[in-house]
Length: 269
Image (cartoon, rainbow, N blue to C red; front, side, top):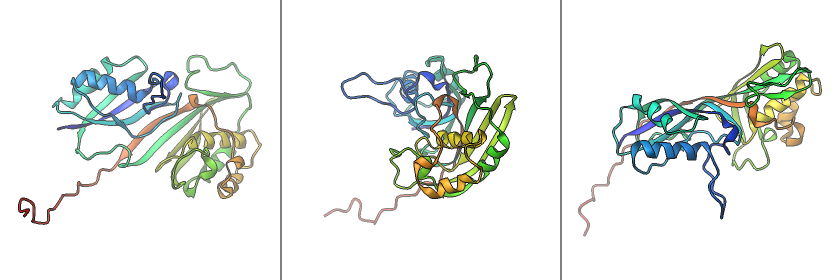
């Protein structure tokens, strides 16, 4: 049976995050995974289980979420993006599809992913056309110290101070490969964070801490102390979900391990 990998984009405002959720005694919440899985089922005309690589929170957006499903249907992958998107509401689309090995796992085979966080700053009119994808602060932010602080996050660290208490992970050690602050307009900034993986709300807390640096509440070198503190209270606030976007995820799929018998199959006594 073929297994398909699809690249998914969604505007997350009206989704309760990526992961399917069904509260006890209530109807299922509207999630990107649930909506997309229903669309795939309509295309392939059989039940499927759709697995996603990253559990984005409610209100968070994606340009390059990765999902996968297996079906008995043999469909040319170039036909899937248009076919699935036609079955989706306007706030979610499939941009690409390919056949992958049957053991491909979007979660465990992810080795690298990048998020961006978009900010409007200063005493200006609030964002209008991109108000759902931009977080706003009235403080004027200085990107120069923010860049210095961002560079201090790069490396392998225990990021427990940058995670919500309910992160639910056994290990809070993660590696950041790249973190930068870019000016995208007179009153606009974009924070880019690329790493091996992220804890619950980690990027939004990184963004909140860098904003504190940008408005002068923290010095750039404070980032190192915040990491070493292992204390959530040492960091800045968790910024709103609307500014956050999952940009892309890179996977490495190891060769499938072959199963070797012990020579006794078929010879039971």
